[in-house]
Length: 113
Image (tube, rainbow, N blue to C red; front, side):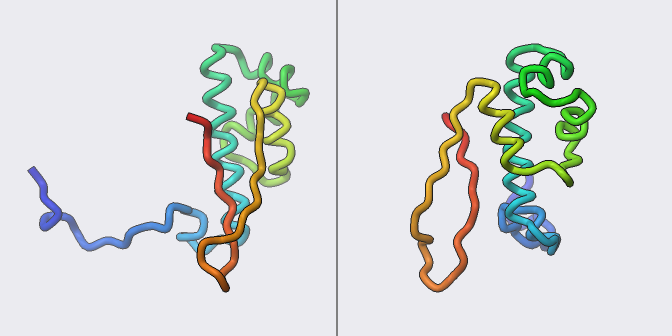
């Protein structure tokens, strides 16, 4: 059985793979990815096809297919939130002071329990 002593040297990630890779718009990309995970969960939970899901969301099936495959360039956070609301989900946006003064705030998705 491995112990912490047996682990190879590694860096601990920030929790945002896009930021860890140094990509631009990392927080937006992380948010989009989290929203898509929720959308996928809802589609699977309902056991419906992409065509039915696209119809529910008011978009074309090829667009939904791209979104579900993570091809998110050209699709806004707003669209993804609208898709979630079409699946009878409430999307709440909370604005509060960042814990560390003097540093930029962050964007985080906290799924309901």
